[in-house]
Length: 264
Image (cartoon, helix red, strand yellow):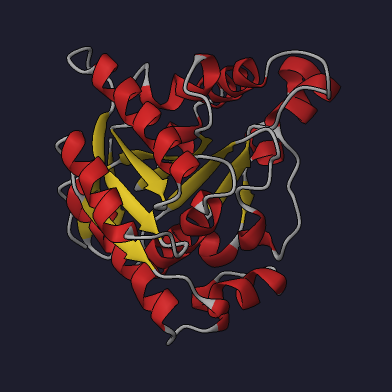
């Protein structure tokens, strides 16, 4: 599929952003989506976390109805208009959602949601230039691995800090990608360092990148500006477009495109 943006024809890019819970992948995903939309790209962000808050910063902090909620209510009668909502900059937002507490498998919920989007021809109808799957990476089995399998994402980018559990989760994700190597599944595009002030943070994350023959494609320093933006339920590039964090997030957005072989 080809999409037209600012007079430049580019192939549809599909990426997955993984990372352990709380590492900042949704904050990065929302800011990256907004940055690329500001460049004239048509962006679709799909939240693959049972908390269903991946796209909240693009909607003033409010959550949108999830695919699984609507499926429980309407079954096969749900429509794209009900599950795809426009956020900041026109970003097309979808939340997979999760099962009722204590009932069912969250991973299976992601599979159902992605299959529903496919069944309703979401990608053909909206023709996004870029699809971002924001995926919980504490586990990489079943549905949580779905975006890196089955032809959904082309590349996977892993958000990590220098903290022990974040690196552990990132290593597991990278190993899962290696295990899929050669099957036509998503390739590892690189690491995104979200600094948390851990000891020798850059060095230890660089060592992790070296272990998997990849690179750190972008760095986001700790910033009170990001916290301030989240308190106001918006992206930092909207609240403080000239701050260092906003510049770093714009650089990450450009690095993602570059890693996929696209320049806009």
